[in-house]
Image (cartoon, rainbow over the protein chains, first blue to last red):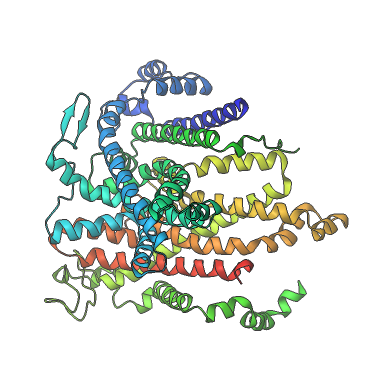
Length: 327
Length: 310
């Protein structure tokens, strides 16, 4: 048990270190900070002085250690494009992305699970086949196209909903939220639906498949034999057991949600981290790219670790030690 | 060696008599998907000869023709069946040329990731031990990130490293970025089947008579693990095309001088609010058609090659 946790922690640490190394290499290969800070006219002495001041004359491993130390304190330097501190930029954008991802996750779960249960219980009927076909389309349509189609329909043709930005926001301390104004909610609808479509389709198909599996098992037959009403069998017994894999997948998909948020934010010009990252990639703004990468990797590692540990706690079969890898 | 060269006509006859062809003939879905995919590939491959206009030929473009709606709408002209974009380029021709670029990038990335993945998977499954452990750890790390993010990162790094990249280099970076997200699945699949094949008698026999390990891997084991790889590659082509389209839509994919379907959608998206929906919708439809038909083909191929479903 302890060995397992330690191994997973070590693995997570390795992932973080390699991502940090990639981010650090970005700085090494892209541009010369001394040249860009001093300009053309600087003397050789000035260059050397700045180089020493920035620690660029130190050996490579020491520079890396320095970078990791700064990164741990959230210090990634200044954005090359905007000239502001990267940590401030990211902190400003974080609430927008988190609110969008959360709204999308809620839509995906609230619509996906009931539809999946419905498609399993009414298997073969016309309406469930419609749901399945729609979900197949939902998995194969690229996110940006979904966003464009929604904008075309609801913003351009019907003029019901706004298509870009967050609308009015309210500042709660450092957190600016769009959830407290009507305008903010209106702006949230289309991006949140766009972001949720893929996850929704995935959850629908997963719940249906799991539900069909569970409905075949003996304990469901036994529950029916005991004369329990259908409702109790479906929702009390069957659904409960399908939810474990659903929760796992949803947890793991949180990362996918962040990745797809880049696309959704670009389509809707949503002022989140993904939009910031895309602009940074287009302008080769290395500090912002490095910071975004490290932050996303951290979120990923934490989620994956939590899901692994949760699984370990839930499923006793995993606690049997695997035979050690052969030599 | 002699059997492969002599068997070319025989191979075709064997294929027509085989399970895969029979399954294909009896699946209307697969036939429709194959026809659509073939049509798309044909238009893409022969774009310079099939397309009504050449969207890259500056002399044939007239700004007076800009933003014309499709032929069946008011103001449309029979010259431009699906309308024109904001610079007067024919949408239908642009789609054909764009599909050519999308397909090229998609197929090239799949080939690269297939070669890398199969080689590493074979090595991992055949060698075992530390090599296996190392390769699988790398796979774990890659799998814990969404492919799109990895592709974006690699593309971003490539851009930052070669700020003045010419077109060939830009395509190279893009293909590498997409392939690096895909090889893991091949490696895992091939590793699994290789570990099974490794203990079969024919491999042991080859070892006993002193065949070199590399030769055993590629000549004896490889043909027996390729089935699932082909299925994976088919589905992967659709995924790679969609990834390319997404990257190009985000403005970090193919160079702007050779617009793919994603670039066309991006261009259309900029003028969405002035009502010219056709600039976006038709390239989008083409993208969906390609992805969906290739996916359906892949699904069919998976079922056809799966002996348990027969």
